Amino acid sequence: MGKLVVLTLLGAVLALIGERLVAFRRACNASQEVEPVELPNCHLIEGLENGSEDIDILPSGLAFISSGLKYPGMPNFALDEPGQIFLMDLNEQNPRVQALNISDDFDKASFNPHGISTFIDKDHTVYLYVVNHPHKKSTVEKFKFEEEKRSLIHLKTITHELLISVNDIVVLGPEQFYATRDHYFTNFFMIVLEMIMDLRWTYVLFYSPREVKVVAEGFGSANGITVSLDQKYIYVADVLAQNIHVLKKHDNWDLTPVKVTQLGTLVDNLAVDPDTGDIWAGCHPNAMKLFLYNAEDPPGSEVSSSSSLSSQAKLQEQFVEETWENLVGHI
Image (tube, rainbow, N blue to C red; front, top):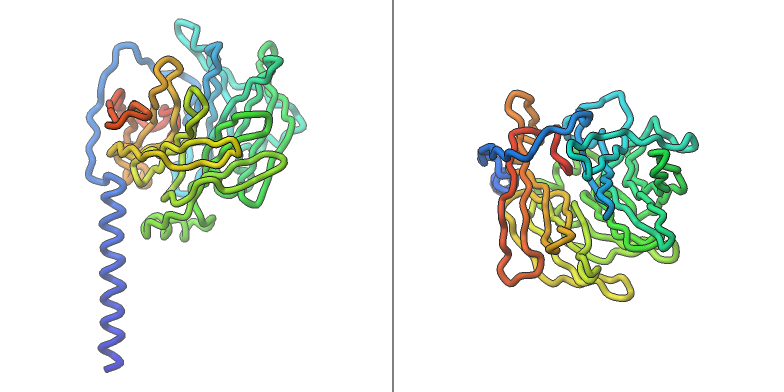
């Protein structure tokens, strides 16, 4: 009788594991094939051979790009090189990137930049906030941008017990920001288990010098985050759930859910169109190829747009490319 119980339990566990693996492959769009779309006005930006993780564009047309992210389980194109922040002027006919100098008081050797966000103060000073993973930890670095010198002055390192496995950030005031946590666990094996078991334990947090709190939770992997043009709504990408959450922002910085838009592709970083308010999303059509990276058969990437608050989400595939290194927002 005891052996029968053990065999029954073992069979149930194996069945559960098998079901979760099948569901995980489905969530990753493992069988999805990518068909390249040729766009005549697109051209390769040289100088980003180590990948481009996130981009934030100022109203002036200057764009900051984080590059060289080292992330567990993902291909690493710059094993022995620290990450960098690049600047690109979109007003130029043929934009080029330039690596920004960072002040010497900052530990550049361990710089591992992830999501970024800018904030322009009342005196027009530009501040750049960068999610950083030095020594496999998570911090938020605050820099002052000096446009004439094309440099960043490091002002502050922000740490907190809730700032764990931080992915992206959107800054809405002087040292006031929302940030996403993309994994509950920090151990790589447990992260894999977390994804396969579809544990929805990640969250969005609000940070200020006076208060730090979780303001939205229940995400499988909270990833890209941005804000609507009127700053009334926060948009959060849940990558494996293949959707974007629309959350209403309240005066006390709390967030309440409004709607969820399914995209049918793995959603990563988000940006809001400054003219229409629509959401632009960098996506992964096949995340299994992302995890099992093969330079001969790259995973591909795509950019999609959707109307943010319409009753029926209007999803439009804008760009699909059989390449990996040059996608802005690949994690």
